[in-house]
Length: 78
Image 1 (cartoon, helix red, strand yellow):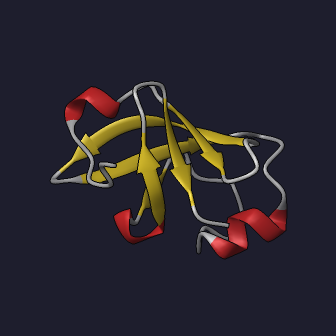
Image 2: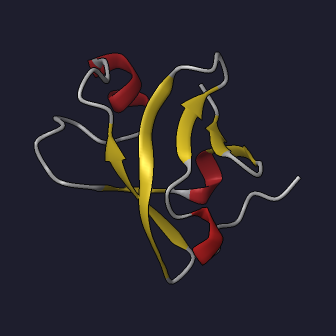
């Protein structure tokens, strides 16, 4: 399975291993995904991802946290 980002990943849902949507890939720049978080994102999930408060537009998603990238979504490790 692929775990590195390409431009084709823009617009994909970002989900945790349980399938809960935590955001959407807004942009891919220099191999990093920038995610617009789901407004209902819990503090515990955002803390695990190192995002803190969800008051910015997007957050960088470290590819080291990616479990797999499928045709429709990016799955991150819990």
